[in-house]
Length: 517
Ligand code: BG6
Image 1 (cartoon, helix red, strand yellow):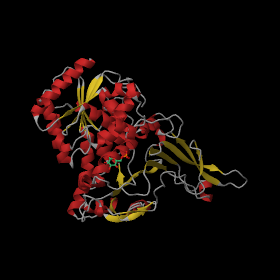
Image 2 (cartoon, protein in one colour; image 1 turned 90 degrees about the horizontal axis):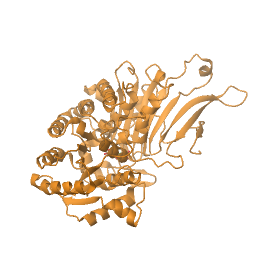
Image 3 (cartoon, rainbow, N blue to C red; image 1 turned 90 degrees about the vertical axis):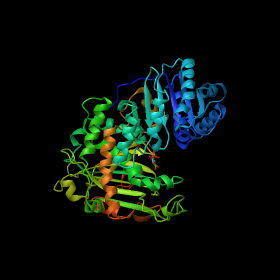
């Protein structure tokens, strides 16, 4: 969909409040995103950014932090001298104890002063890069501290995890909703900000030849892989409570599945699009029994191993991880979307840490031509594939069958690739740039609405409950491998296999590509 409601070129004048301004997310993602938006003229000049955290910092120190974050993580390198100073002067810092409502009075005064000096009409965007336990109390203190009394709009941007299960998510949502309306809340799933995830709707709905094929009659299965080479790094304490199910599946994996499976929306507005996504989530088969969970879901945990010649320790040896932990670092499943379009088509999903490559890919495998057709009888024909490459390479390729030049009727697979990220001059925006820009424009399409989130938790909760109640511990897999063997078995049972990711080409496939390979 090329047009959404607010197709403006620059964000309205606003004050951006970054709670958790000394944290990792701000440093790695938010400051670089704000700088890129600025460089592209999307923030204009009438904006202010207020960094907030508990530790004391002067404006100068804070601007230095922002500079070093941009130098390290931004796709634009900071310009020097006056140009940098012109950007940096928009940043100020206040030390704030978010638990104390009286601490918000100086923030209010500071904000009013900034609004007066930049001519900002009271628009305020609150980005909570904070632990989720604080979302409710910070929202209340924003209200009780008078921060929502200006004339402009007020928006709350929050990060995952949104709850630990459905009941905790619902409680958190109620706390937030006592202060903010649903259309003022922007729940981030950064996968929705990725270029190729957004491109799924264009590929599907702007090409006439896909729609007639996009269903159970022509699609054999869909495979979604989100593999990472990293382990849990320094996030052991968080990860050990969440595991792959809550960290990746509840949000990113289900969102990608939803984009592939949704019906075309009646209109291009955020609510119509999200209505369709909710319907998909409500149609996903729930695995309620022990038997279902054992048969359809694979739970894995990495043990020691090696990757590219480097020895790696097992998950249980990682810092801040319980040495007897049964948290999963790998998840695979055979899911079904039980509606007219998809009944019976398996959606195989897998994600894990310490896998051999970093890659996010969606493979749509089409049904093969009937066996009695001349060519299929004589040759071992491969199915047609449409592969959407989300990360790190961005693009798509199709795999088709074509005649091998020559007199004998030989057929060979040909992969035709359009690598978007390989094009000269393309500097794809980071997910956070789009998302901050969208939130500032009030464009909610690529944020998770509450009913989407609720529906996702209702798929996840029974799986977690079965693991807990029936003591289903993860199977181990060596770091650097593709996870437990059961993840291959669930496809083999159906006569399929995982297609290799990341351009690991199979023999005899001819590639036609703009990557030059
Ligand atoms: C985050 C998870 O949401 O996504 C991380 O918490 C994971 O565990 C990350 O590493 C992956 O995102 P990306 O954009 O690097 O694929």
